[in-house]
View 1 (cartoon, each protein chain N blue to C red):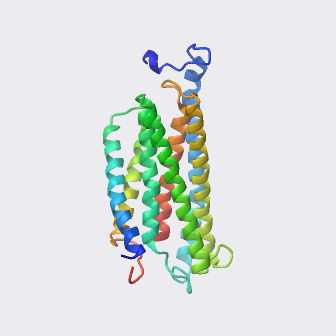
View 2 (cartoon, rainbow over the protein chains, first blue to last red):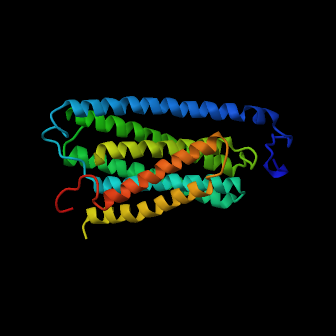
Length: 204
Length: 69
């Protein structure tokens, strides 16, 4: 570990507590992501079970979801995963301004995805009259799973906004940036969950 | 040019860019060690797969596209 990458406390001393607890915090955060995976998995398997136990899919009277807009909105979210990865890489290499730009790009893309999802919901509810409460298993599954994912994206956007403010205030240094690592892990997680949701709702 | 065509074109172009970026990042980080880097590598693989799926969906190879779109 070089001098520049040593974790320092507010008084400029080496932060021993950070060094000793970093691995534990990482493991705790990964366990949190695993528990979130279990939450999504339970809903996904319930959806797949219901889908395969009925008389064809989608149920009579409901059109299949249009994949064109969903594909575009998906690459917006996947693109945000790439920008977040490069934000972390630039921070690790000491390119602070690039890090900030990539982080801001991630927030904009994440917010863009949420906007796209709001547009799709509006189209489904008012254009095709598919609702959470009145369209049976299809509406309930679709809005619950994508809504839960959207909530995660919204929380992620808030988290990243806090990261921007904290970074601007100098909270993170080259040796002490667990918050950014956790933010990147979380953002990749919401990306990966969307890969699964995109596949099961739009592609199969 | 209708909206669906623009969306599909966007998905194809952005899918190629994101896929290339994800797999390039994976290539660069391939020898990185530590728990978080292993998780990042797994996430980048899945991100790349997602980009390929979006690309194929944009090209009408997979997924459902209504007639006339």
